[in-house]
Amino acid sequence: MKIVIVSDLHAQLRTIEYLREIIDLEKPEALIVSGDITSSGEVNFAEQLFELFKNLEAVFLVCGNADLGEAKDFLETSEYSIDKKCKIYKKIKICGLSYPEETPLVGEDLGGSIFVTHRPPVKALLGAKYPNSPKYHISGHLHTVGFAKKHKATTQIQVPTLQDGKYALFVPEKDLIQFRSI
Image (cartoon, helix red, strand yellow):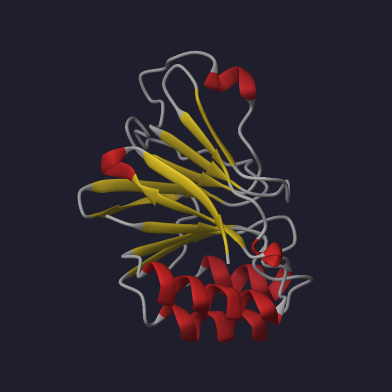
C-alpha cells in the first residue's frame, strides 16, 4: 500500500497545488496529514483541501499548533480526523493525537500501529521497547528536512513542510520510506 505523508501546509494555497501534483504523480491509496493544516483558524482553506480529499481512498489527519478555533473544530470533527482514536485501514492500525498531546489514547493498544502526531515524539520514549509501542511514529512541526530513524521498537518518521513542496512516500509492508520534492 502506497501512502503519501505531508505536514505543515499553513493555509498556503500553493500546498493544495503541490498536493494535487503529488497525488497525480504518486497515485497513493492513502494520505496522512500530520498537522498545521490551517493558520489562525481559516476554515475556508480546510474546505478547499477536503475537496481534493474526495479523490482519495483514505485520508487520516491530526491538528497542529497552528490549527486553532473554528478550523480545529472543523478538522477534528471531520471524517478524516484520527485525533484520540484509531482506525483500521487495509489491516493497518492508524492512530493519532492532535496538538497539544495532553490527552492520551486511553485504553488503545498502539502496539504495531502507525501513530501520527504533529509534535515530534519524546526521544526517551523511543529509546526503550514498550509492549504498547507503535511500529511507526509520524510527526511534522519542525519544517526541516525529512528523516526516518529506527529506534528499539519504533521508526520515527519526521516529515518536512509541504510549503516547500516536500513530502514522504511510505509503503509500510515493505518498510519503505522515501522523502521527495515536487
